[in-house]
Image (cartoon, rainbow, N blue to C red):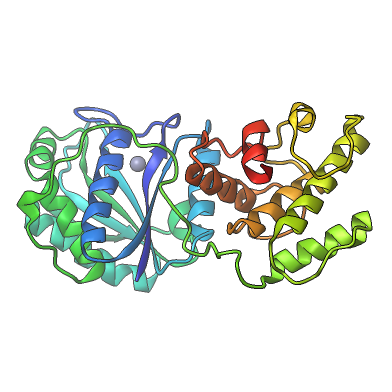
Length: 334
Ligand SMILES: [Zn+2]
């Protein structure tokens, strides 16, 4: 079983805030649930959006991240908020599909049982982008109300029990030794803690690498073996293609030699979401070659490319901004 779990809203797109802050707490819950899931040997990827500036971008980015990964279950963690006039309390879990309903009831029951939070139960919601647009069984956990003093007190006292109950009810497994697990720090995690499970090692013949080689051969008339294997020759020719494009599009005046040197590095410009064309194709081709999956070799810098770049940057200890600039190109071609 593979799970992708994300926190609601984002670093720049804040959620509810009263006695506690929804975004910060949802992140803590997700991170602690992930620890328990890993104890249970469950494959899990966590995601927190640190990039989006608008609500629409935020939800689209979260949905796209979920849909870009291989998984059985999509989970989103939120904390609830009430209007001033009413005083609701407790946990509720939201679903839209029938498969979601079953697991939703289990999760809500488990959290209530483990913590003493009131059980508001499973609620069907057909108006939520996350539930409607993720393509697997999806649920949203509203842990408790940020504006209920009683809820927040329980939440603080039973934090580990709540997270453990979530992990166990999502999987039907039981963790051991809950008390030995350290309480997490209330810190904001960095973007995308993930090595996408569909990343393929570049060792054996790969149809996308072959596609890239065919394109290099047809577009630039280079002599290159179409074997779907990434080696020094393919890397060199990919860099020659990049140098050619920098010359054609930006009059960079580079010698097209497939060698990564200071002049090539200087000529590099920044490529980011929305870009289209042959430089984006080179980036996508190189991502496939290096074991990442940009979800297509179409020359369009969309979400698939963005998340593959983020994963590449993370694994290479680069700033994870999803933008391909001098340092990211350098890691690809050096
Ligand atoms: Zn929320």
